[in-house]
Image (cartoon, rainbow, N blue to C red; front, top):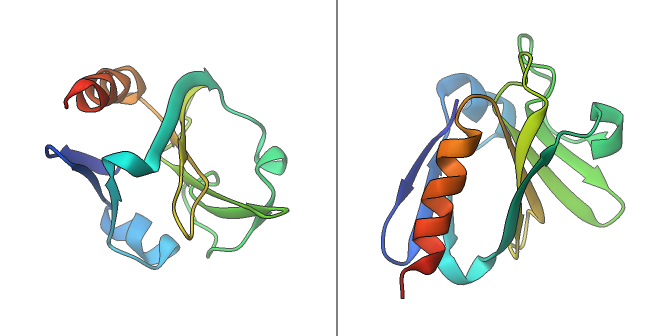
Length: 119
């Protein structure tokens, strides 16, 4: 599971060793102005995410980076019986959407609400 750390102006996503091997990067930093919107919704089927452009994960079939048309999608976490996911729309050169799955969805949504409310 990735870890999220928030400061006044940005959010930093630190990937685990397995996630960083699959995604090809250890972290992802986003400025507050790059987070456009977020919502808790049902996770689409893997085929609905698009074509996988990252390495496949041996233990987590959802984890990876996908391309659907011109959209770049980053899927993090593990479903493991959880149908709900947090969809974060971002304005980033390499990523358009981030899907976060797993136990931390509701907690992360609360943190994002507080983060976006700060001036």
